[in-house]
Length: 143
Image 1 (cartoon, rainbow, N blue to C red):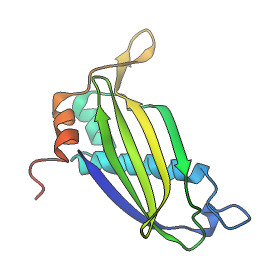
Image 2 (image 1 turned 90 degrees about the vertical axis):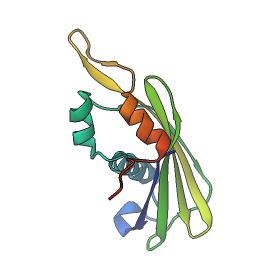
Image 3 (image 1 turned 180 degrees about the vertical axis):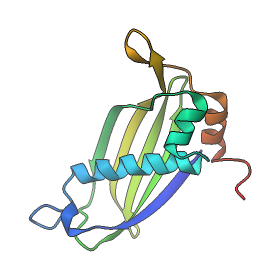
């Protein structure tokens, strides 16, 4: 399955007054990790949507388990990976580590959407080419 890892340093603005990461920041980082996962599949988000005539991949479910705190100055690695591909949606798992310590595990479900004249958008089957890249770990030619 497709996976991508980002690294970042926790900044003061990411933290609450006690100097630990304010929980909503993790969800912002996970959303960025999802966008970078699309690039790892071979298409930046806007190119992917244009290529397949989609409106977006709205988030319909999310949750996280907070196992250890992250603090100002910590260097963390966030691995985002496709966990499951369904007909009209896909699940992403995010694992944030500080060294060998798993600090946060996140999960999200996103739905593939296209334009609908009556409702504005509707779910649609994932394009086969996108599914193949999600399952294969990215584009065949990585040159």
